[in-house]
Amino acid sequence: MFEFAWWWVLFALPLPLLVYLLPAKERPQGAALRLPHLTGIQVTGTAPVERKRSRMMLASLAWIALVLAAARPQWLGEPVSIPAEGRDLMIAVDLSGSMKMDDMEVNGRQVDRLVMIKHVLDDFIQRRVGDRLGLILFADTAYLQAPLTYDRSTVAQLLDEAVIGLVGDQTAIGDAIGLAARRFEKREKSNKVLILLTDGQNTAGAISPSEAKELAEQQGITVYTIGVGADKMLVRSLFGTRQINPSQELDEGMLTDIAKSTGGQYFRARDTESLEQIYQTLDELEPIARESQKMRPQTALFYYPLAASLLLTLLIALGAVVGGRFGRARQEANRA
Image (tube, rainbow, N blue to C red; front, side, top):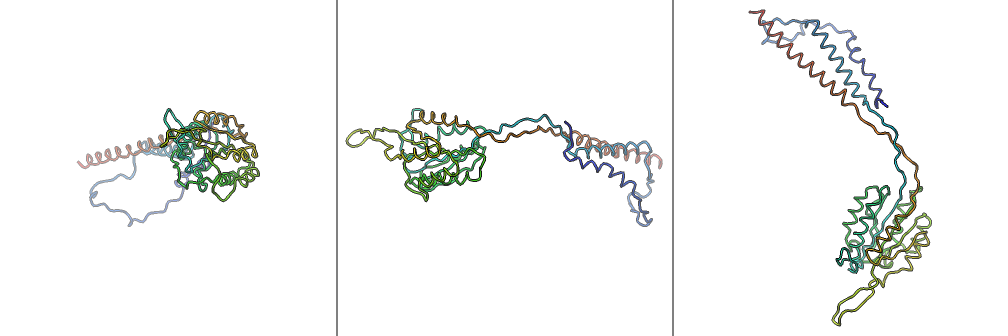
């Protein structure tokens, strides 16, 4: 389908004709411009009729092409449906001091818990095509690092730049849930999902986990909690190597209660493989069916009449230059 986006510009087509038909004022004889260096040269006031008609025709065509270009001609393709299904996922990551515990392994290398989370979350984020993602980082308090957005690359980059202890060494789990609830508050037609990753228990913050749980229930937020940390770890000391539980401070009961009360589920990530399986389970969340949208591809065509107008203007200019030189040559021949 062809159309002009700014069709009202076409009303400017007869503008030169209206200007031409306006009554011209008589010019006083004393207002003539005298050119001393042209003294003695006889200047003809009119060009040959054929040349004048040609210039008028080219100028008219150039004006018509210019107006057509200004009206933005375009070709509209067939309507195309845009997938409008997706999820609103807020990811909350713990940055407390205990995340420095290097009881995880990535590609055969011993790493801390945050490095492992970043490694697995990066792939999880990139697979979220069509979903809106947000990022919350928390320790002594919680702060919004990235609002809900379709820009997955930016969310992944902001997560990669996160540093342990950036906002303290404690764990404000309640504040993280409360902040997510405030960000979801204005989204009515949305399946509000919070994925919270932590390795400890609530030790800081202005909101307790029970208060945050009630707030999440009121807002209709589904909270999926993930406890991160290995069950066993070998530690060397002066008395030899001994086995410890690096996750003994993990409050699994509190995390399980929050998840079940909000319709979510608690997961235990003891290593990289188990965390990857958790994310595969989260992939199966049912997306909300939003109102479908349609768009029509647009192909701009203004450059065709614009190029024609420029070409015609160039021909008029070349004709004026050639005609001027021919007229001067004829005058010199007449004087001789």
